[in-house]
Every structure is written in structure tokens, then in C-alpha cells.
Length: 112
Length: 116
Image (cartoon, rainbow over all chains, first blue to last red; front, side):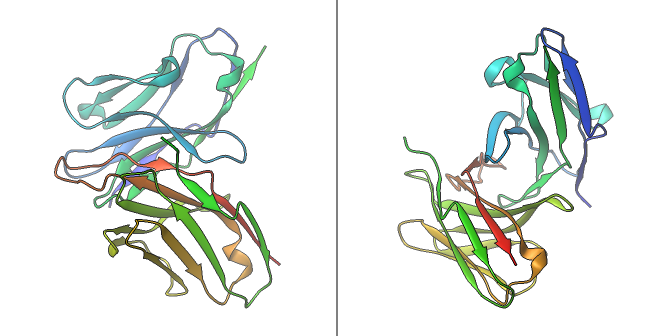
């Protein structure tokens, strides 16, 4: 069955520090992968996506993610975190016909 | 372009009632998907509509239903509300073209439903 695992429920980083959020997926075919961010009480904003091609994808707000088929991973990174990055981050895989399968999310806190 | 809009933003209902939520997609988008978000179950797919036809469905009881109109606007209905239906209901729209294997979904702000 298709699934997405985000091992870290909460992560706290200092402002200016680097960030890596982990995502592992289980999917039999070629995965189509997404990262979304959600601020409190808001909808989901698309950060980036991987469909094919270059395994390092760039997104908005300075985020990037690397697709590693051998590790079934799609980790999200940012070199320098800003206080405004505090939010919940969701990794998702497309399960066909616009069905997104989401991970449980990682809540990011940023210390000044 | 205007984003995905959802109305109402907040709803309070009592058990046994029914509720209808509305979603207007981004102009030009023909696919609308619905998701339920709860603290316990996370984000779960309800169903997807494309050109007025349900194209995919998640594992929810028949009390949850939806429809799409010719202008791509969509409504979701929940009948005989239960306490466990309290959630944030998110709508997402996309072009609907899956020839590339996947589509990019853009989410609305959600409707917060509270069932008392």
C-alpha cells in the first residue's frame, strides 16, 4: 500500500540554522512527490514537487528537496531558516487520480 | 489569478444535522479534490471530481458525498453529522490533466466544521 512517513513530529531550530525535514515513501511505481506547508488555521501551500528529471528540485521560499530512489526518500532542506518558516510541513505522494497521500506532518519551531 | 475559495470558513452544527460546503476552483481548473484534516487521522482524501464526474474516492462512509457543477465549482455534503466529523475540510483544485502522470493541486483555506 502507498504510504508516506515523516519520522519527526516536532523539530526546533535556531533562526539562521540549516534545516532538513525527512520524508520516506512507499510506492510501487514512479512516485510523484510534493511538499506542502501549512500555517496555523490555514490551507496548504505548495513548496515544491518532483515528477521526473533532475532529482534535486528547487521550490519557493528558498526550499529544495532531493529525490533518492534507492532510499525511498524525498527530504526537504533549507540552508538558513527564518522565523517566518515556523509552520507544519507535509510530504505527500500522488496515489493516482489526484489522490494525495500525506505524511503525518512535521511541526517546525524556530528559536530567535 | 484568484486562488481556491471555500465557503463558509467556519460552521457549527449539531449531531444528526447535515452540512454542505462549497469550493470554487482556480479559473481554468477542472479538477476539485476534497480532504479531511483531523488531529488524530491527519490529512485524508475524500474524493475527486473532474468534469462533473467523480474520478476517485477515498475510504469514507456514504454519508460523505459531493458533486461538481459545469463551471467546475464543487460542493461537499455530510449527512447525519457525528462528533467525529469535526475537522478542517480542505478543497484543492488542479487542471485535471493526468497525461503526465500527476497533477499539481492548489489548496483553499479550508472550512472548519465543529459538530456539537
